[in-house]
Image 1 (cartoon, helix red, strand yellow):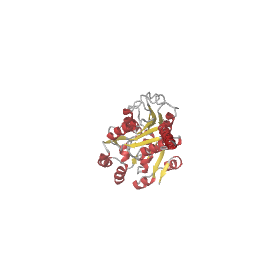
Image 2: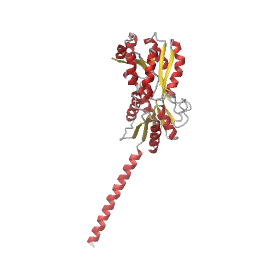
Image 3: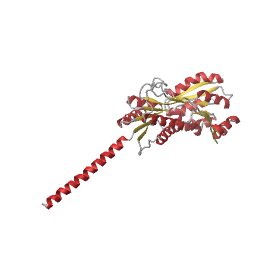
Image 4: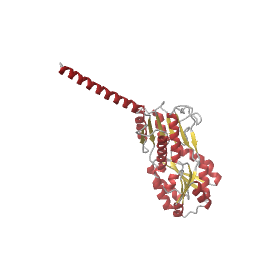
Length: 334
């Protein structure tokens, strides 16, 4: 009989321990599930977009959403492949995210095509209305809102004129079919004549075209303006190499591209765009904002970035007042 009681006691203890373990495991799973899930899709790797993604993740962490600790954050990069964008958007959607973030227009469009109710934040989209992402900047009207980086095109062309006052024809290289690039080129048609400039466009289909197209362009113009274009930005080293051989200055849209060898820009800080994206994402996660009624935040204030090393290599004299401005209010690369 004692042996029977002992056996029963052992069984009860075993069941108690197993039950406790099951409850602990279930509680752990519940806690893990309660952590917000965030999906980030980036169109491709290039310094400006990388800075936006980094700024977004850093700011989410500051707001209490740190991957692996207080949130589950998945970052996917399509590397410019349209099929990757679609499959990666679908992959993020299978995780039942609380919120997704699209960095650059193609990524945002891919997410929007897949998820119709999950909140989505646009990470620096130049023209979200033309891209079909929102109906109106002030009243997005669906599950999407975010950050729009309006390129300070007028200030950039004014800068070209200050540095290269004798240039009359300005080459413009961009990807055919890019919504953001085409928006800027359309603006150029109105802005350039005010500075006595004629625009000469050159288009590429993919980065593979850039080497040949840019070599032809650089034989025909004395200065080149680059609109916001992910393909050109990702192949900036090739463009810089060809431009240096031809001794033609490049005026890109972002400071990251000046660091890569461009001459000068008045550009929106890409990391700060990411910070703004992270803040809006956190506001939505915390219930402080609803995408349908939260206006798209437009950021268009740029800062002067000058590359004196490039200027010296090209034999271009930068006006002293611009050097002073870059030193005090922007960035001077020596």
